[in-house]
Length: 59
Image (cartoon, rainbow, N blue to C red; front, top):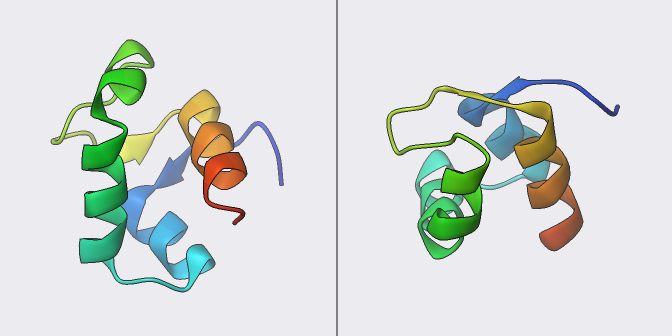
Protein backbone atom coordinates (compact mmCIF):
# COMPACT_ATOMS: atom_id res chain seq x y z
CA UNK A 1 0.00 0.00 0.00
CA UNK A 2 1.41 3.34 -0.94
CA UNK A 3 0.07 6.77 -1.63
CA UNK A 4 -3.04 6.19 0.47
CA UNK A 5 -4.64 8.43 3.08
CA UNK A 6 -5.57 6.53 6.22
CA UNK A 7 -7.55 7.03 9.40
CA UNK A 8 -5.47 7.10 12.57
CA UNK A 9 -7.37 4.09 13.90
CA UNK A 10 -6.61 2.11 10.73
CA UNK A 11 -2.91 2.87 10.99
CA UNK A 12 -2.87 1.85 14.67
CA UNK A 13 -4.56 -1.45 13.78
CA UNK A 14 -2.09 -2.06 10.94
CA UNK A 15 0.82 -1.34 13.29
CA UNK A 16 -0.61 -3.68 15.93
CA UNK A 17 -0.70 -0.97 18.59
CA UNK A 18 -3.46 0.81 20.48
CA UNK A 19 -4.71 4.19 19.35
CA UNK A 20 -3.22 5.62 22.53
CA UNK A 21 0.22 4.38 21.52
CA UNK A 22 -0.23 5.82 18.04
CA UNK A 23 -1.19 9.18 19.55
CA UNK A 24 2.03 9.09 21.62
CA UNK A 25 3.99 8.50 18.42
CA UNK A 26 2.20 11.39 16.75
CA UNK A 27 2.98 13.67 19.68
CA UNK A 28 6.68 12.75 19.40
CA UNK A 29 6.63 13.74 15.72
CA UNK A 30 4.27 16.69 16.14
CA UNK A 31 6.44 19.30 14.40
CA UNK A 32 7.18 17.15 11.32
CA UNK A 33 3.54 16.09 11.03
CA UNK A 34 2.30 19.66 11.43
CA UNK A 35 4.30 20.57 8.33
CA UNK A 36 2.33 17.83 6.53
CA UNK A 37 -0.96 19.36 7.68
CA UNK A 38 -1.62 16.99 10.58
CA UNK A 39 -2.97 18.34 13.86
CA UNK A 40 -4.18 16.45 16.92
CA UNK A 41 -7.72 16.80 15.57
CA UNK A 42 -6.92 15.39 12.12
CA UNK A 43 -8.67 12.04 11.70
CA UNK A 44 -7.54 11.25 8.16
CA UNK A 45 -3.77 11.20 7.78
CA UNK A 46 -2.56 12.40 4.37
CA UNK A 47 -0.51 9.95 2.27
CA UNK A 48 2.83 11.62 3.02
CA UNK A 49 2.19 11.37 6.78
CA UNK A 50 1.23 7.69 6.46
CA UNK A 51 4.42 7.03 4.50
CA UNK A 52 6.54 8.91 7.06
CA UNK A 53 5.05 7.01 10.02
CA UNK A 54 5.31 3.62 8.28
CA UNK A 55 8.99 4.21 7.54
CA UNK A 56 9.84 5.59 10.98
CA UNK A 57 8.03 2.89 12.95
CA UNK A 58 8.59 0.00 10.49
CA UNK A 59 4.91 -0.60 9.90
